[in-house]
Image (tube, rainbow, N blue to C red; front, side, top):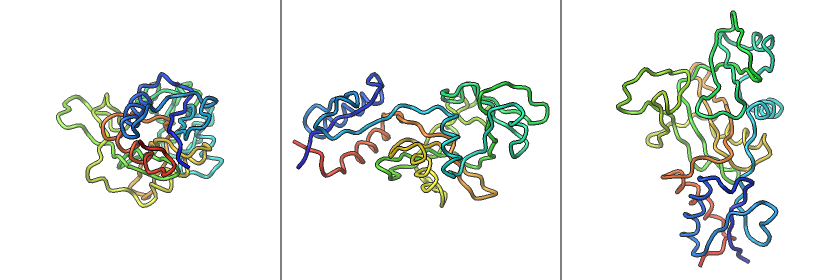
Length: 235
C-alpha cells in the first residue's frame, strides 16, 4: 500500500526544506507538507533531525570508533593531542569556519569548549547520506578566478573554496567512514564533512550536517534518492 509523502522536522522554517518541499511536490503530483514529527500520522515521512553540536559529535565518533580527529575539552588536554597543531572551536554550532582558529600546541593559550587534532589534508569532501547509503560525494576545490589570499588550512567560501562534483576520485575508505559517522549519531542521513590525509591514505570525519543546502544539483540528488522509495504514492 502506497502512502503520501511529507517532510518531518523540528525546524519548519528551514529554506533547505522549503526547497525540497517544492521539488518533491512537483514530482509526486500533490502537496508535500512540512510537519513536526508528532504530526506525521499516516504519511511516509522524510525526517530531518535536529542538529547536533560538535562536541557531542566528537564524543559519539570516539565512542563508536569512527575515524575522526582526536579531541579535548580543556587547554591542558589540547596540549596532549597528536601532532603539532590544534584546532580551537569557540562555537560548538558554528559553520563555514566561524569560531574556528588553528594554533601551534607550544604556547597554546586560546580558551575554547572544544579542541581537535589538526589533520593535514590533501583533499576535503562532503558525502551525502540518505537511508544509510552514500548518494553523492562532492570535493572541495579552489574556486576559479579567486584572487584574494587563501588559507588552505580552513577551506571555506570566504577563502575561495567551493564544492564540486565533476571528476571526483573518492578515497577507498570514505564511504565507510561517512556511513559510520552518521550511524554514530543514531541517524540514517546527513551530509558528512571529511578530510583525506595522503600520507596515511586515511579519511577522517569532521562533522555531520543534519540539513545540507538544498539547491541546484544537491536538491536534485536528494529528491532522486527519496523518490526511489517504492512506498511513496505518486499521482
